[in-house]
Image (cartoon, rainbow, N blue to C red; front, side, top):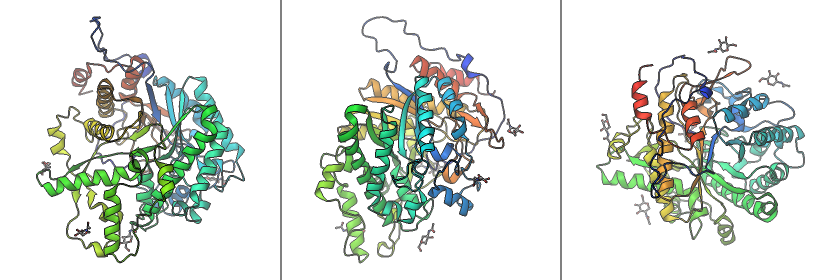
Length: 525
Ligand SMILES: *[C@@H]1O[C@H](CO)[C@@H](O)[C@H](O)[C@H]1NC(C)=O
Ligand SMILES: *[C@@H]1O[C@H](CO)[C@@H](O)[C@H](O)[C@H]1NC(C)=O
Ligand SMILES: *[C@@H]1O[C@H](CO)[C@@H](O)[C@H](O)[C@H]1NC(C)=O
Ligand SMILES: *[C@@H]1O[C@H](CO)[C@@H](O)[C@H](O)[C@H]1NC(C)=O
Ligand SMILES: *[C@@H]1O[C@H](CO)[C@@H](O)[C@H](O)[C@H]1NC(C)=O
């Protein structure tokens, strides 16, 4: 997840044992008449929780693991991380994976989303040397899940690129398409019999955008050029991996495969200015469609608005060809329909403002191409009120998720949707009523969408416990469980409310109707 701003007060109230408490009076379906629509998630709904490899495992230099671009950046440029920390030890999940799976179980979840570390499995990035210890670790972790009836949801790449591959150009080198496919083949051979839900990439938009704005790993400052190369190669790598799975593994392994996209609903900072309204809408198309359009649209390829604008600006800037690489005809076909479901990471609405008074001739950058900038911390108030938002917690706009899903399901034929990330950041206090509210209103919205006929089959809360949150380090916590980062053992403690709420929803498959009064009654504890 990325970039939510928050301000909350730290407190240290100890969490109760959530497993023994059923704290919410649930809506009892007393009316048994035939026509009543039961307020319940489908029986086979996936209720999950997630983490990722670099953010949680630690053991960065253990058992032949190779270095990743994040190891290098955090070691050599600690000032890029808010608190100067790194994930050398992180939550110590490399050693505590059994505890972690146990926590998943305690939450009443039936699925756990993890990612695989490419440099742990292939220390140099290439498949001629497979690190047996890496394979053993993930086999142990997956076996532990299966033992406890937890369905694994596995993301193959979550930003931690092997350093050797970065030295060869990383995501800007077209050869990475094959390097990734070779890595994926190792992974399918090793774990595919046990994994039914795969995603190739997590949020390619972010690692391509931030990675090449000079902000985060690999910290190359080539915005407007390298980000598009990165996205292009990621789309091809994704599609080739999808075809590899379909041609060689699907029949025997019977899984589904997609990629996780961070999607945003964009809101103009000034809703009374038509130019700003149009710019926000344009940003929705430009950003979200970067990866959606080539995969889900009928014609494939990048969207017309993206191709047209980048070609136009490139020409104004004196370039003979567009900074957005062109797909060949067969590549467009390869990428089209290369997903069995749509996997959405959703956090909040973003408020945006149009760039004004800049000289496009002199400005080559992704943001300049989009023409608007996300204005963090800008008030979301207009939209907040007009949408009758029930959730009064900061950055809690479940209606934004509905808007995205409705827009996309009208536009594309999407077979199935998973919400692969959704969560609430604060400063890490155990008292987390706001996080509980956030989950409550989002799950309520999702149930509403399901009842309207939208095929959502799973939901993953982010995160199981506090992890290393990239540039925010440990200043930004989303965990259902708190982790004591001064404790070498990295003890986990349940937060006060969110684990109870999720357990309640996950095990009853219903949304407690009495949450609001519950919140009011307990406001001051
Ligand atoms: C691994 O890294 C840790 C720091 O996280 C360091 O203390 C340790 O010496 C390193 N071990 C090896 C074998 O390099
Ligand atoms: C990237 O380069 C541009 C142009 O040289 C510069 O203005 C900008 O500050 C650089 N950004 C970063 C994050 O280094
Ligand atoms: C190209 O961009 C310029 C600058 O924004 C704009 O004035 C012009 O209309 C655009 N041309 C086309 C063909 O879109
Ligand atoms: C949001 O609230 C701020 C502060 O009250 C106000 O200045 C701003 O105009 C509001 N924005 C919108 C879009 O209503
Ligand atoms: C965190 O761990 C340290 C070291 O073991 C311990 O002194 C401290 O009391 C722990 N903090 C909490 C809140 O449990």
